[in-house]
Length: 283
Image 1 (tube, rainbow, N blue to C red):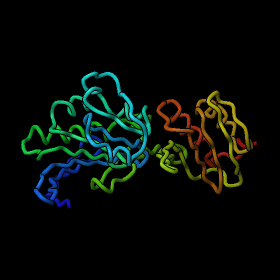
Image 2: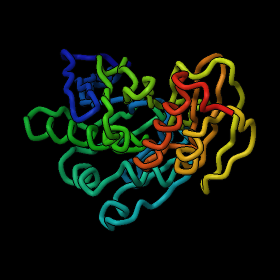
Image 3: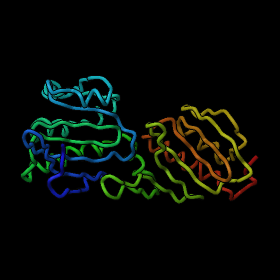
Image 4: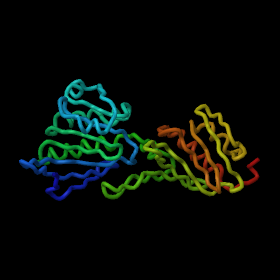
């Protein structure tokens, strides 16, 4: 049986908010240990478990995935077994700093992620400032990995970026807003645990409606009558995406996470160019 023994500590680290407490496991004997948790910006990250070689792998097996070698740090690769359902994004999260903290700064650490919640459990109580800082830094390093293109959103020209806020277990979703001919919002759309980048705006010509599938080379197919002359330049620079126009609103959904600032800015331009300000520009 687990019980929390001390008041919890919440700390902002970059765009994440970490939560630290001390747990006690009761039974034949008492065992005390510290736990640090944080949520990813959206619930669409990889599942993973990182444990010492030889540690019972029941948690990792429950999360699914396969064992991988992260590479880049031979000492870490020999010491830890990494199990994940997403090799590429797990490698993105495990920076060299994260590996060093795991190897040298924490007592018997284990890390799991269920796609939303990252949890660090250490085999002792983090009692001094250096150990507490190491635990918080590790969770912060993992939770702030740019899995969702937030760096690109924050770099958008003329955009107001809103990072996640609120308590650690109830964070607001990040988004950026550009005040163009119509306000355009860039955010993350999550469907069945998969995140994609989305641009949307209201105030387009209401009489127009339809959908276009845009290829990475700028070609497109579908209801091209929804485009204005101003739209045709921007659509060539958007990248692979789907544009949907309905009831005075336009939505551009990229095929995945869009990390190219140029593509995002072209998406803003495309949505804004459809504003209901010059009907004569529509064919």
